[in-house]
Amino acid sequence: MRYRMQASISICFVLVAVSAQSLAGIQTYNNYGPEWDHNQYGTYMITGPGTSYGLWQQAFDFTPAIGEELTSLVVTLTLGCGYDYVQNTADVFLLGDNNGLPGTVLDSWHFDDALPVYSSGHPRPILVCPGDGTVSLNAGQRYWVGVGTTGDNSVLAWFLNNDSNEKGIWCRNEGSGWNVISSSYTRPVFRVNVVPEPATLSLFATGAFLLLRRKRI
Image 1 (cartoon, rainbow, N blue to C red):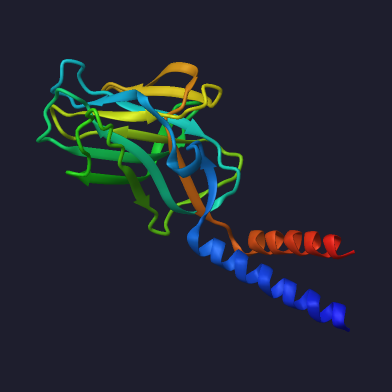
Image 2: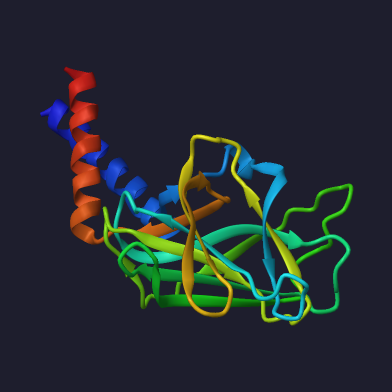
């Protein structure tokens, strides 16, 4: 009887913990280091059409480990040094896959005056792109995160991760559609959070309870 009561209490704790985690979102993809660490010197350049580079939108692929509703997408960007700081705009995209290229835009976020200039202090703002409850991801399916700018003469920098083995497909849109630049190149940092469906949450709870029971036995 006492064991059953303790087990019930354990289940309650597990369910409360899982519920709290579901409200905050669960990482389904993340290549940041601890405390949002990343490579503060290596970046990918994103440019507006009025720059000497022309339009450059950059995108990298990822595959979710856990599916269901998108709660947030996080990237780390800054303004390029020596360019037009007045046109401070950033656009972030979540895209589906189109035969190995970025496809349909599933969600997008626009930021005005959100980025500081890349300077000796290396400011690296973390931009949080909240989900609106309309986009769900499928585990094991390829998606893309893209970054661009609507500032005609803007130049942005998207920071790389610290792990040179953390590679993905690098694509660029120069105004005529997406093209593969490299099939295996170091990914920039981004993090994707989801809220699993109730059935998935119950599996988490069951697994956690079985671990608790095993430890008790």
